[in-house]
Length: 294
Image (tube, rainbow, N blue to C red; front, side, top):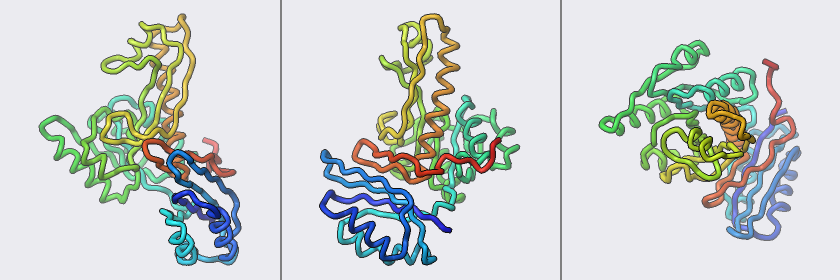
């Protein structure tokens, strides 16, 4: 049976859940999973509903039937077919751990996405990518050619119909224009420590300060560098007995895991922007199942 996901954001008011669930029932839809959050700080309401039309209604027919309810509550909303895989462009530089992890998860179906292109400013991963039958584009970026290079990147995005860009340790700062054009559709991954270390060799700085936690943060990209709405974070403990090289290795593992979890949440329409923050609902039952074991 076809399954859909309804996402709703609207001003907080009484009776929203009843209105939404009641209309879906009226349309012959069976709700299989539901999550909601009412934020008193922003006075916004967020809801994600998985449902199956037991009468065989199409997505368009359900949308037509639901539209009056959405209008009555002032909602921003969408209905997504769970069988449709989101088209994704992966961007990478010279650190390949996140790229390789994504390719493995993609290959076994743990990340049900359609990788339509990999873009890099270096050639290191061309063979890896091409061996997966994925188009590879090497687009060099310098201060002088940055506008032209970004135009080439956006041409790939538009030609492939990509809905999401993921920066798998892509070591170039995107322009404000590109960030605005793809707002809410670019996910970045980077290390995170307490205290914070910026600039060259942050893991060495962390080692020299005796850091006990290494972390990673995945977030949407905005014009404010590394300050976009956070989707996912995690940490791993380190001790005084470990070397800077250990820090780097452990950091790579946590980065790859956090990155894939953030992408998983986005492609399943579990992430809602809430000002400078996000609302991230848990996965539906079966949401983590892979098509094959490996």
